[in-house]
Length: 105
Image (cartoon, rainbow, N blue to C red; front, side, top):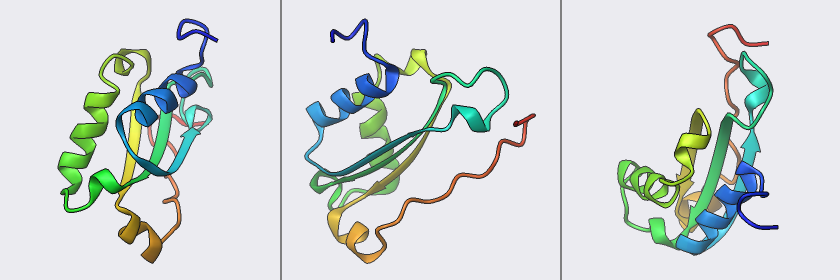
């Protein structure tokens, strides 16, 4: 499947794995929790990588946004939860997302 046929979620996964040394990758399509059609518009990414050792959260998020720069226009929102392996081992759970406050389903 080429990039033109790949889902946005698949393209995000490919881009992340090309840039980061991934220990844990969880991508959830949360579009169904928001108003509008339940398409690939809202995602939650939990990413664990050695690349995040000693890196502050804001910088981690900037690195992810840089990796996904070409894909960002294709979706509306991306919730990021980034961890070093040591942080993840202390609390290996995905944070629950709140329901949409702007007319969610």
